[in-house]
Picture 1: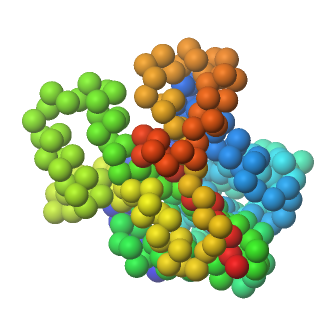
Picture 2 (picture 1 turned 90 degrees about the horizontal axis):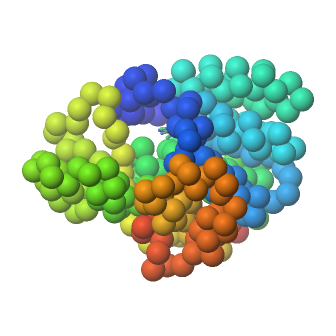
Length: 268
Ligand SMILES: C[S@@+](CC[C@H](N)C(=O)[O-])C[C@H]1O[C@@H](n2cnc3c(N)ncnc32)[C@H](O)[C@@H]1O
């Protein structure tokens, strides 16, 4: 399966490894994701982390006793994830080069499939549904998929937060982004830019439904908290903030204010 060269070019230029470890936003995304894992995953079993990147989540889950296989199409990520696994010999995990629509995994052998990245990098709906069906192939009946997407309005919120609204071009950008969900103009996508599809939360539900999943729940990752100006200070002692985000995490009227949303669903 071909992976879009815009996606690989991006990860050759930008170091994905430290994204989840940056003070403030990185801490929020990492801790919220792990909190969602702790409450929505079964207590043990075999996890296939598809698009697992440099392995932050795989290392965490292996440390919690899961049997983890990470699959990613970017050689740099595979090398980094292997080295991360070697650095925790008490809780190693396996790493293979591969792609979401064709996993190097036998049928019905996984308890959980994570798709934390591939669904926003596959900009065609057919490809996203193919990735969800491939995850269903490797899941045992009753197994769970956790799928992360970027919310359609995240760029408008992010640009407002970063003070970018004064630039004339940004409004054309918003127009395309909100209409068709693409992060960049396909005709002029810049080398090393972020090439992705931004979902409306309900679209994720529809794609999971089309791929045959049941018990679909949508959960905000950052929730409203990523918009707070003093996030870095708050994350120094994050207990109350994380508790407040948890209170609002599944509220439909708030889902679209989160930068990322995770769909949790079950294979019948
Ligand atoms: C933003 S990173 C997320 C990494 C990690 N899952 C996390 O949540 O921090 C997106 C990942 O998706 C991977 N990816 C992109 N397209 C993919 C595809 N078609 N199949 C599998 N992985 C893909 C990239 O190589 C990258 O590692």
